[in-house]
Length: 569
Image (cartoon, rainbow, N blue to C red):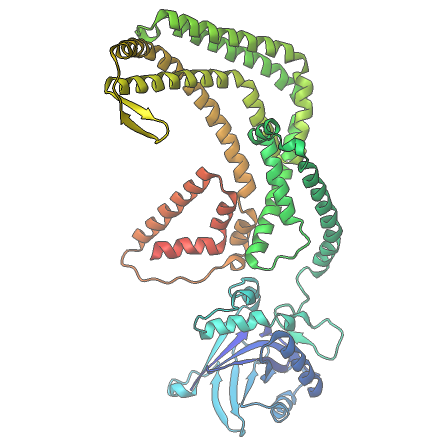
């Protein structure tokens, strides 16, 4: 017989008393959960264990005795051995340890009083058979409880085979009510377990809980008022809805409102993943506010608002001047290309007129820019993401003329391509059937072919001029879009990066531990490379589609474990 005893490290220095735990059914194993200190009344111990069985649904029992005698307790060993006649048992464990020594002595006594096995930490007897051996396993009860390796709610309806290690994890996880009673509680029983020194940060946690309830209620009411105001019909009119969907500040406001509704909900998180999601959102919000306050302290110091205002107007004039020189270059012979002079002059003057209008608009707004920046800078108190969203909207407003140039050039180029494709079908005796959405054969007369040839020739020779303007303005628009894309990427990174999960993974990795995945491979380096590139491609796809929740699930232990299992497969 090989008997396994799972013993918590926190009980190594516990006072003498009774071992409370569970015999694993179908296995020659015992899980020790706590030690009840001497002195105690056996009747009260039985009553307490009955109460714990009804709460935990675990068959808790007295496994045996724990002896660590101190000065004045010479007869403690014999007293604890006699307790085996009071508590019903099939096997009685007798664990003992001398003060100042690391060795353990373990005896297993059958119900008839005969010793079944013995293990002495000081004597290594290699002549004993395997049936007489005892395996003493130390486990960290605190890490097992906080790691959420086998939460109780995830085991409901599970049909997986119950292994010895899994049963041990489930026993510790389901015995949480047993750990609420520690050595400082008033009562006849004193216990030693992973929280025997008192629940971790109990005073701070309770104060925060008491203070968070009214705060969550007030914030939930404010969010309901906000959603009620947003439900007005005027905000669902097409122009207002279209403009709000294009402004980054409005999008960030709605995104943050959804986060507030998730975090400040009075409903308690039922699963570990839901708790991690709320914690990640809350920590990212705190970091966002802290960065925003740092930005405010930098902006409103040493008169930097005035410096930015004095820099912004010359910068806008410089951009307008560079665009004007670019248009004058296009109206000549750009790169030695032969352009259609008439169309080139018309397009150039058209765009130059827009630049002059834009310069006049900037000069008109220049006296108010400092005041606008002063009030806009206050939005950073809502978080750095709000300040970056406002910056993105300001860039969009300052480059609105470039956007207009791009729209004009793209529309004109699209009309040219559409006309050329239609006239090309005319040459081939085809036409586009609008009803059936297909190309059908068609017979044209001579006048139609003649007019079509003239129009095709005109559009074909005017296409290079239009294409050049379209290409230049598309590149300008692409520069603006790339700058705004960097701002949006920073906002999404702050909103979705799981700071709480990463902090736990660095400081307390057992809190975010996932399932174990073991595989046999010939080349470990090859598998590491596959895992790295798979995760890199997955991150690129998530960032491209801008899904912060999916990115949070990637750093979640379960989502990360799926990636590892897929790569190992």
